Each structure stands twice: as C-alpha cells, then as structure tokens.
Image (cartoon, rainbow, N blue to C red):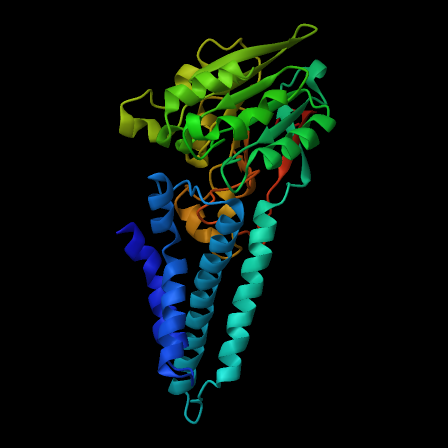
Length: 376
C-alpha cells in the first residue's frame, strides 16, 4: 500500500503530462519507465536496508533519488493546477484552450529546478535562528539563559558523519548554556550508524546535553540507541526531569518518550510523571518530540515546550497537511494559555523525502527572559 500511494503521482504525471506530448511512443515508454524507477525510491530503499526509512545507497544516489522523486511530486502538483485551470476554462463559454508542448516542458523544467533547490535547502548545514521566550516566574538568575534546540537530525547516508560534525562545530561556537535534542537523531541501527553519530559526542554546553527519543528511535532499536546516547555523555530524559540550579534560582527541564512506544509495548509518554515532584514555583520546560499533546502540558503548568517531528511541513502550502496530523501545530511559535510551544522545523529531516521549500532547517537558540505576570 505504501508503494502504491507513492506511485499515484507517477501515474498522474504519465497519464496527464507525458502522454499528451507529441513524442514517439518509444520515447514515452522509456520516460515513463525512468519515472517509475524514481517514484519507487522507497521500494529500492527497502531492498537496500530492509526499511523504507533508511536508504543505504551512496550519498550521491540518495541525493539524486530525492531530486527525481521530489520533481515527480512537484510536477504532479503543477499538473493538477493545470487540469483545474483547463476545467475552469472549459466551463466558460469560449474559454476552452489546448496546452502546447512548450508549456508542458516549461512546467517540467520548473518542477526540476524547484526540486533541486528543495534538496539543497534540505541538506545544507542549518543556519542559526534566534528566538526569545518570556517566562512568568523565571528566576532572575536564568534571565538570558540560552538553550540550543537540535531536532530531527536523521543521521543517515544523506546526513553522514561529515554533516553531523559540521553541525556540532557550528553548535559549539555558540557557547550556549544547554543543548536540548528533541528526538529523531538517527535513521538506521546502531551497528550501521555508529560512526555517523559519533560526532555528537563532542557537543558542549555549560549545563550539558539532554536528549529525548523521537519516533524513529523506536524503529531502529530503542533501548540500544538510548543507552548509546547516554554513553556519549548525553542525559536522557524519559518521562523524568532534572532541576537546574543557579545561585538558588531553579529551573526544571523535563522530557517524555514518544507515542511510537505504544506499538512496541515500551513506556508510553507520560507528561504527568515527567513533571511530578518538580520544585514548587520553579518554571518547567518540557521536551516532547511531537507537539500534539501541548495543551495537556499547558494544563499541567509547563511554561515552555520544545518540539520537532513535523519538519515544518517541508513545503509552504503543503504544510497544512502536516498541521492536520499534529493538532494544528506545524512550525514556529504558538501560545497555549500561559505556555509557549515552539515547533522546530528540524536540523535535518527524513532522507526518504529530503525537500524544503519555504520551511528552512534551523539551529534554534532559545533565550529565556523574565516576563511580568499576566494582567500587569
């Protein structure tokens, strides 16, 4: 079913775009076959690694597949727009028109260029994004406290050790107080990804590096990965919290597991357990890979939630689909009562669809500020 769904854009492109072109029949069959190969990227990924989630081809091949597959998706969307315009024209008296081959070729060229830009945007080392978050009750000792959020690195053949090392170098230069990694660090088993993830061992922050799992950790050996993160010097927050103390001022950092745990009989996310026992009056920052449970966190008194998972929706316009799957939260800042939710677009993204258009990747530096109580 998975491969059939991703074959539908190919079918649309072949029947509505390719077939009307004035080309020899042999050329049409050849192009259709090449497009079919590209459209089944995830099938070839499964053959290469046993999973559609982690293609194990050489990086240039993964890049090429993402460009070709992305081009098919974009061309299918452009063709739908063209068909809609043609239908409207047919309904208007004297408004029907034929589409010349030159226009179709221009459409294909646009889709190919957009796909190339999208892959480049997806695979670059992310730029820094600075945000400030006002927190009521934040101790003065934590005013100006900086947290670097990394999320959805998806370290893989597409985002290998060299990419991870560059991210680490850019992160360490910032000299932040704390680094929070909100899940989906990898795509692949520990045996396959051990060398690629190794640069993360060198992440440095004054108060340490904290990590929670995302859904992809559960697909590739949850226990092994969480133990390995801990062995690399990261503090794992699995339905628990730590208390940060600066000169008597206290701040709570809590983290939860991911909803993907429910399918494997592992510990389900439990926000109540994560914040239970927090010092009275200490503001709570929650790390939760998926943003959809943010209202529950707000009801429990959490002041700031940092999430990822959505990749920002990848493409402006299509991000509405990701929003529907994540309770409306897809990219950026949201205010939920007294709590701020920040949904990070992602440091990397899943190598099975590495395309970004208008939803750039980011290294997110969050600066905490004291905020006056509401009503003042």
